[in-house]
Length: 231
Image (cartoon, rainbow, N blue to C red):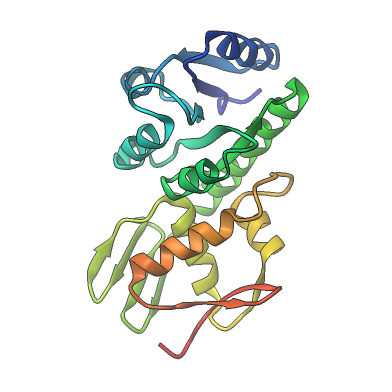
């Protein structure tokens, strides 16, 4: 196990925490547990996890609000967040992605599936970190994407984008006019072997369009997405 192995588990049900913690520790992960959102925010400062597994339905500060608080702090941009959701919580899955989560895991979950998903997410994080070493700037019309500073501006006005939105925008804008198939985007942004929900990319693209204020990204029905040149 590499140093990329610190996981924070957040759930108000202690038996679930014990189950998840036991199975992850068996695989060599360093695990911290919290029973509510505020406790998770406090623990972040010292534990500095690589990945947070966050339950959606918690009393007080729920998982969505906790995720929004984490994503509002640039210091935690490098932390992956995956939600735990019941299969019937369709709304929660979309809301979680909109709040800045990287993925979600359906409950109930088998130990082997849990470990596999966690390892795949952390492998993807390692791939993304390697990409960030490239100091690159893309300028198209009034849009500027600076990978070195992780900064996007439109008409010289800075935009705050979560990591996944930035990476999708950078990928598409790196080859304007090229149609990126959905599977290709998943592999490059999430990493091969990571299983994410079918609507994950759609949610991120929709949020990107809203923040950019114009439709730079075109949907190619049944295929994927491309960055439009005629803006």
